[in-house]
Length: 110
Image (cartoon, rainbow, N blue to C red; front, side, top):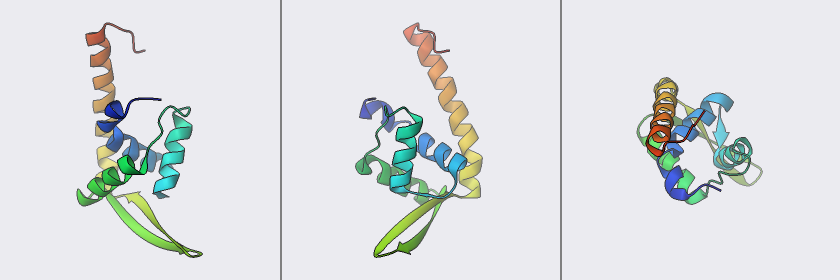
């Protein structure tokens, strides 16, 4: 499991990329997809995920839709065109950061 401090700076990039690759999703679905993709090493909490989703929504990167399923109301998140265009930039920026950290720490990051 990775430390919350490491995830804090990457959470928005993770959310944007997961939504780009998998389309419209609700919060729990996002947490489960990230858990699966990370081999269960990234376990997102509601306390971390929802503030990130709300911030991305406020910045115009996400739209939301609510759906009633039985007695439950689910809020689905989707990328806006602006959010879609930002994903590639954020991922490239993060990959560059990983390479830089590899150099600083003098480890091969592949």
